[in-house]
Length: 122
Length: 111
Image (cartoon, rainbow over all chains, first blue to last red; front, side):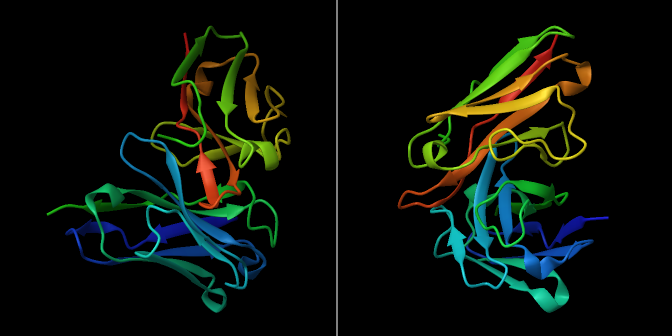
């Protein structure tokens, strides 16, 4: 079964850091780009960041550029999101998502994790 | 304020048809494929349509997608109470702020 499982969320104070992880299984992880998408409570979806299969191409939303860093470890079938200088507006459920096509970065997302909640508050 | 514009809500009776619009610009919908997602309460989004009009396996043909210029439309026929959910359109933006973009979401109520 194709599966994505996020972890690492929690309550953190403004200005602090948090690292999210996404464990992938059931597909050839290093054939696919991967992405993070977040959803603030009661709000819509917001694309956060994406990384190509070989980490050669990386992109960020303007709202997180310079504060968040996406990375992956293909040997461990894992995706990460290092979040620094967190703000209240970063409070959201963070999903990792897999594109439909292998090696395609700019693609629809056919597999989503269950999400991990990040709450930024003092 | 979302990059793509969707109506906040739509409603229709069981068995009827409904359409949900998604409006963008030449830097996003106009030059990229559109996808549609269904999000039931408390669950992760589910892909309904990709590449404007393709359905993943397991998605019934009651769901359809189309695109014209800088707008896209999701159609749902034979509405069921189980279709009550939030629906999001998504695509990619080729502008200076390149990246994924979504609509604000449309709440479908099956009366």
